[in-house]
Length: 186
Image 1 (cartoon, one colour):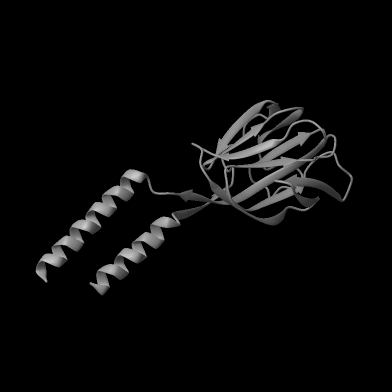
Image 2 (spheres, rainbow, N blue to C red):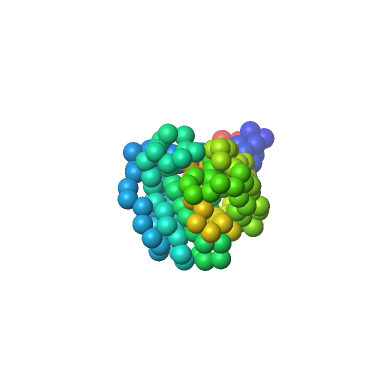
């Protein structure tokens, strides 16, 4: 009976917190013509939606300060619109890190942007920023300098998969049946 109880507690604990699946969005092999907003692209299980006075898309590796592979490139005015990142199909996800840099048309050594209200200082070098934004339904990036282009690549996120209620009900019925059969043996 103690073993059954421990098994039930372990299963309940693991199901209560769901499972995560780490993924990296690299944009490789997805280069397309960039365009003016509003536009949206999907890659690697995430959606990137742009509104306002923006220009961007998935660019080949020729953009300055990139890592030489396809990457997301984006430009805006400092007061109009934003980039919104969501999970394809909806739901919660955790944005762990993102590689970003200033890309084109900016002689400044740094530019300030905001990711869900958190200040990031972009530089002319592609840098990994650890964001650790857990259990969010969307991520908003705002606050770009006028006419500044930036690039993003290697976006690491966890897809929070929460079991469906029907699956939990079936698990509960299975555990109840197991418990009943063990009681009959004793």
